Amino acid sequence: MVRLIFLGPPGAGKGTQAQTIAQMHHVPHISTGEILRSAVADKTELGLKAQTYMEAGELVPDQLILDLVEARLNQADAKTGWILDGFPRTVDQAIFLETLLARLQQTCDYVVNFEVPDEALVSRLLGRGRVDDTEAVIRNRLEVYHQQTAPLIGFYQERKQLASIDGDQPIESINQRLNDLI
Ligand code: AMP
Image (cartoon, rainbow, N blue to C red; front, side, top):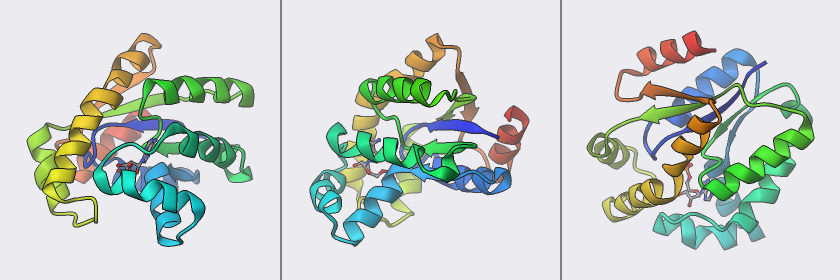
């Protein structure tokens, strides 16, 4: 059983690593970005509300995210573990998650912080070609990350849950480091 939160800037490789580790440990990979992208593609009410924020590289308002995460963690497949990728992204979201996990009588094993310098991120993201991967939107997402998400590093450090990983390495080396940690 593993319960991990993957923290880090956009393009740090969280999604790629989460997918591999989730498969190995038979736990769901819960990516709020993926859930939102499929809602946008399906033109659901959630998708229609989230779309403009996502295209601008802004965070989607908490009222759209929190219930969604709670419902997802209450699903049967999440009872024995999970990897959260892209959530929490603000201190408010982290506090919500802390309360939710206490209620579910679950604890997170580690918050894995992927460290990658901004310039490496910009070139990686430009190569990825998603609709929100234009240079102006990428710069904004990095700015949003530094302002709203990076404070979570201190938040989880204080709670002695943080493990940092050098994300500016080949995929296999990062995977190895994650496996050592788990
Ligand atoms: P990601 O795939 O994690 O890069 O997320 C893509 C986009 O979805 C982000 O730029 C945000 O607009 C939105 N998003 C994903 N997760 C969250 C979250 N936890 N809180 C707010 N917005 C989010």
